[in-house]
Length: 95
Image 1 (cartoon, rainbow, N blue to C red):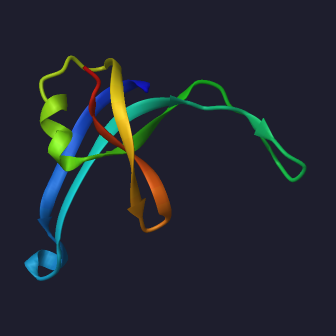
Image 2: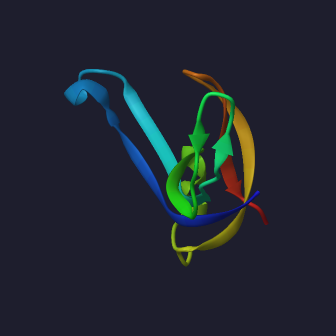
């Protein structure tokens, strides 16, 4: 998958002010095209791009540090079961 990446982030810690569960969240910030779409109930007209986020495997964050942003990069993807079902996750840069 080839995407236009603005940057990468990772947050770690313990929720609920240190009293809850540990967390480790990594994301890729990207620009995604906005597409117009219509159906029988509504019409959405759009042009251009919007900022978006794609989940990143936390262990892969080091591959994204020190890259020249913004730019297009080829990434590898996988799947992860989340709160809302199966989601796409970036697993690393394609070599």
